[in-house]
Length: 426
Image (tube, rainbow, N blue to C red; front, side, top):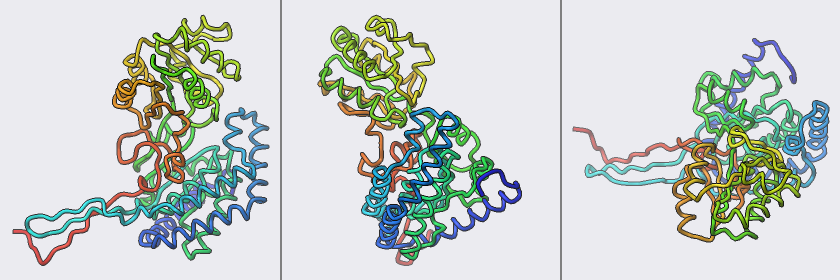
């Protein structure tokens, strides 16, 4: 079932997926960590064993995207090769090796009446993940949800549909090998966009939380229409600030990596801010480096004077997530002006300061209100794997429950266990 389907049939299909996911979640919640880890190791092996099927499906997805004129950065997100597939399988195995987040005793205390209280981590239940071009999300999300005792309903974008389907089938093979329900990881088997609407309703109480991973229009729709909680970021407008006490060699390395390592990821730097105190020494080398590396630069007047290849930045450029080899550059008065610029134009995702001044760095780290704030490091470390989470289901920029990379611990909630000796309330 790949294209448009009868809407009554689609409603019945989505209802059934929800029922089966809820049933699988009840099985997973008390499942010992050893069995969950066994299933994930088996899933990792199944991914490698299915290399031919997965890469053939991916080649068909890439060919279709190229025929539609899809731009390079999005093709890079979509394309798999043996090395990338190996990395996906390794990420699943890494998640298997993580400590079990379920059952952790988060706090204990005793009241004067003798009641003993425990706050204990529990799974969220059923997690719906809606994503676009990145097929690795199928494996990452499915594995993270399983490790944290949750069932997942995955809705892939049409760009990655064939690849995601092949990956999901391999993951389900791993579940079956460990004796866990294959319904714990389900991929919605249709490209019909109406399926997203059904998920946003919560599937009659089956879905506990929605995680969107994709462009601004997808995330905006999910945040506007979802009737269940959402873990999401709308955009990744990430900044690098070069302070007056920044080492130029370090700044060059960090800026180049932050912008151009992979331009299509949400942790790619979109704006470079340079302290005016070092503009005479640092601005030209940084801008020239970016231009020579094939990155378009849109700058303020000071930046435009550096090189005729720099185009004028508009107000909109400071608010733009390019996801491409384009960067906006501005000279600012000092660290306070940098913090103010980020507060005005940023998206609360990831920001970095380059400085040798520990006090300035601490000020930036304390005052910048973003999910991830770095000192002397690339913004491209905005990734759950780099945080030691094994992988991530997304980067959350809200302030409720989860923030930053959403790994296994963030996919749990808690309940209270209360132990008594016959106490009654007077």
